[in-house]
Image (cartoon, rainbow, N blue to C red; front, side, top):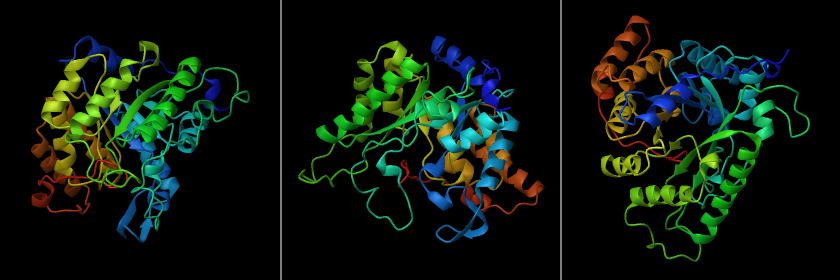
Length: 359
């Protein structure tokens, strides 16, 4: 019998942590999410490379292997959210009931704006201004069926990600915000929760008819101000449970986190980078007010994902410094007989990694 006919586990680590964070923003709680939704963007390459594979040619892991990686991460219980495409969520959350007795909350990517259409060979989508679009619906994400065809009873998925990309263009941004408004209204009507992802602009200087030099002077403030402005018109019932945005640096992150403590700030991971990039980003973000991190490529590219996530959790909970966690991770790889992607010295370096799908 599909899991959709079974009772939903309500006591999740996400819910407990969100309640404590909103009540006391200075508490030590930190929410981790594994963003296993790259099949909404990258196509065949989404599951990640097999050992020795070439990023452009593969060989890549199969979808079945990708699902196995999700099962393993969920069994560890070290992330609070597992973000998936609607099709992956249907298989694992609805059909298998993977999250039924787990503290991990399943979530579905609810829209796929054109800036994440990353089929190999396409050079245009990431450079053109993002356009709103959604492949799935709330009913399909929640139950695997369109409205009116859902099986009776509670459903295992009640959380989704909605993504917005603003390009400092009134017409384009209005269309993006109208799509978000429509989603919010439906989500509230259906009792479906969401968290809000806001990307940096993807086409500054490339909008037809607009002066290429006309762009925000401070991109971090541009994004933070837009978040505050758009949520000012949203009553509590329609608000996101937290944000997923690029790390905006110490000053702006602190301002955004302090502005309204009920709006929990979370950061996205962006490109894979080094292990220290991942661990250090969590430590930096937490130190300046963020309380959530959602990492996709950083986890998916790891040599051993459960060990990587286990040590990421140690950093997030303040039990290990980022550089010490990198050293511990290399020790784990050695114990398992796995060859690291980089030497320990190289993996301890910090670098700038892309903060958008197309980077």
